[in-house]
Length: 268
Image (cartoon, rainbow, N blue to C red; front, side, top):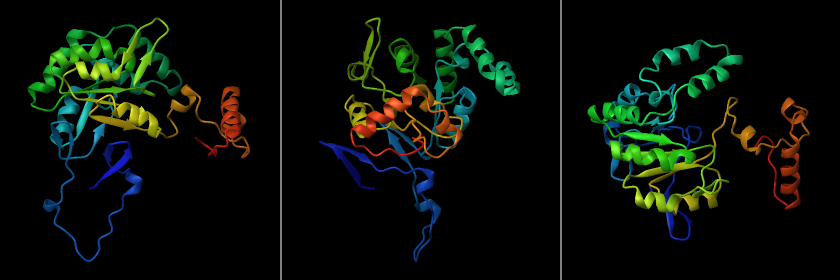
């Protein structure tokens, strides 16, 4: 598949979401063994084009090993329960059985009761390395400088820097900041970064030297990104509950966008 020119001298392979793909046989078909869905991240190749989200409920060392046997790449969350507790399985069972109204508070208590343990990071990575798989781990931008070197030293093959939004530079009020270009250059491990939702943000992340960029904030009824960063701004005209509850900040953003002559799409 030909690469797409995305700006300057930067090129990227065109990718597709599930909704964009439909198999429609024509005059000529091919046997499945003659078709490859393989893809690469740096020097690592995977038969199945699937990157599994670093969620405690989805990726454990055992599930990462199982998914790797199916050709996919699963990333273990280094800030989750698997690096805070020696055996988080009972806690995950409790969370699954918790009432929806109290589950978040219960999860917050569990996280607060135990800090991320560097010893457990090494132990989890060792478990996956012993199975002979490509080990991918995920960290948030806020803790990248702290945890990514620990993971790299423990033998992680790929590091994913993933957050609600990820920028080329992360700045804090206490003066600490993370320059991804400098950090990735110094870290001798392929790095995947994201998410982002604009061409310019994606270009900034590509210029850091990342091996891959995650595009998009996600979606669905349970997704809270828009509520957290204040981007979803209903147009307020359809009468739905979401429009009736449009927060004041979102109205300001909407007015600013309209003032600049940009088209606004309901529900974003």
